Every structure is written in C-alpha cells, then in structure tokens.
Length: 264
Image (cartoon, rainbow, N blue to C red; front, side, top):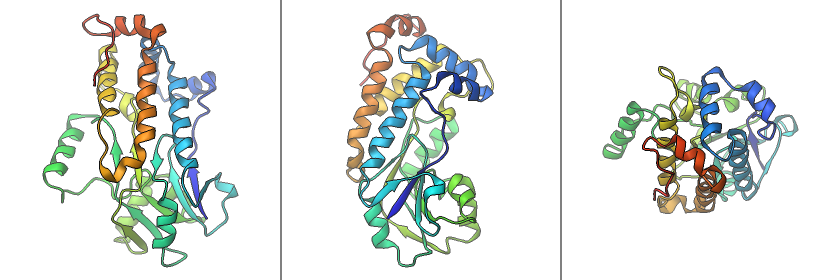
C-alpha cells in the first residue's frame, strides 16, 4: 500500500478561520476577489480541494491518510490540497521500487499561468532547449519517500527534499521517465495572487481570470490525458466565478467596463 499525505491545509469551509490565517500579502487580493466574483475566495479554494480529493480517491493501490496514521517505513506520496496524481501512480511506484528504503521521483508536470516575466522566460527557454534545468528537481508532488523521523521535513516541504536530493546527487532515488502527477497552480494560490510592490488591482485579477479560463480549455498532452476530468471540473469552477449572480460585480471589475466573456 502507498499512502497519500495531503500536507496541512486550512479548513476552507470556515470563512472566519480562513480570514484569520490569511498571510498579510493575501489580505488585499482576497478582498478584491470577494468584491469581483460571485464565488467567495474560501468557497473557491474548498472546491479546488474537493476536486483534488476526487482525484486522490481514484489512485489505485493508494489510500489518503493523516501523517500519524501512516506506519513507519511505508511509502508516502506528499501533495498539496490542489494537486493531482495519475490513477496508476501507486501501481507504477510499487512495481518500480526495487528496495524497501528507496525513494522515487518522476517528471514534473505543471498546469499554471506564468506568475512573472522571469517565470515566462524560463518556461519558453525550456520549450526551446529541453535540456535547460528547472529550479527544482523535486517539486510539489513528483516524489515519494518512506515515512520516518528523518523524512518528515523532506515530505512536508519540497524545497527541503530538493536540497537533500542535490546534496546526495540523487543517491537513494529511483527515477521514472513518466508524468505521474500535476501541480495545479490555480488563480487562487498564494503564488498567483500575491502582489509585492504595488496595490492589488481588480484589472490584474480579471486578467488572471481570463488567462486561467484559457488554460483550462487547452488540450492536454497524451501523457496527461488522465487529468482531463479534473481539468474540466476546474473549467466549470471558473465559469461559476462569474455566474448569473456575479456578472454585475465582474462588470465593475473589468478594465473596459464590459462583463466577463468565455475566453476560449
């Protein structure tokens, strides 16, 4: 058995708890969000979490579990509450794992809109020159390790795992040339919403909305077709953001004063 461990998250159903735990750099963006859209921020994030749970429940040979309930030495798949796995990842990892203590990693896949010019340039460079290295080898949910006192910090934070992987030069890891997971960075993620140097503008949020509507209607590669149902759910969720009750708010937020349109 493989254990899917969803890293600690907020109870998105509790709007007061969400507001109390918002980082300072998200307070203004979330206020703008709630003014623009018919689906409040906390309800959007809860639906994103629900979509991920539906996906996790479809993974064969794996079960979702809290950290303390996972037996020591068992293989753990860490994941955030918005990211997805291939339904056959559990069986693929069990078949590929040659030793009980071995960790595993596979090719990263991302469903996202560039968050900065630098990010966009990096993505373009990797498309033109596939050998261009990524910043991280171990990303949010493209690795698995055995549970232990020495692996908790590595499973909790992928940047720590990546540092460990590079320090060990990949020793102890079995690598699969396959795309078995997707990091789904939504328009409601902290990385996508935060604004460091300027006030968060409604125009910025609406631009992000249109870009994400385009993202969730794109064709997935053959290797990632398993994610089509979840991509469709995300597309439906974005459509609901400016549903009938929210069109007036979206119209106020639009930089040209027009209502939101399907931007396929």
